[in-house]
Image 1 (cartoon, helix red, strand yellow):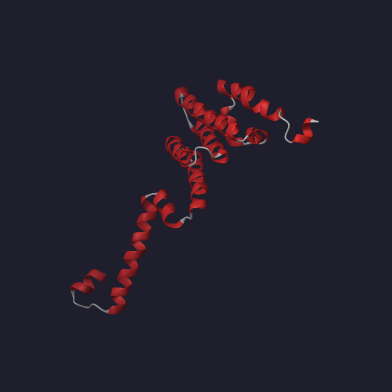
Image 2: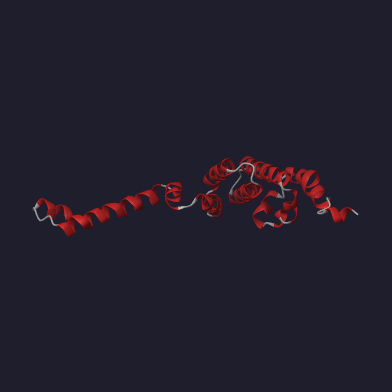
Length: 171
């Protein structure tokens, strides 16, 4: 409609202003639609970006989009590879990915489980105190059936739970 009015020579300041507003709104809409990361980078402060990335990966996994969730999890890991909480979030996503795989795809489930357990292992090595609550996370439960889970428990979780939590506990 605006194009028709302009072709007829009926250009006015309010119309031009409206057209500029529509174009600006369209630009924001396109940025949001083109990708979560684009919109996230446009609106989120840095501290919130990590949280949004983790939530985005978890949402993809919960929607059954395990391949996309695995990619998102690796992006999350890359953003903060030495952040224990970040790595637990990666493990949670991989646990959800294991649960999301349907049919006879045991290789894919094993791949996701190994990746999740590796992230969890790294997280617990960075912050052993997280061993107390992390295995209780329901999103991690699909990792329990993988043989590497027993190794993780015996090598990292159990020792972390038996370590004294304070100097007073050793006396």
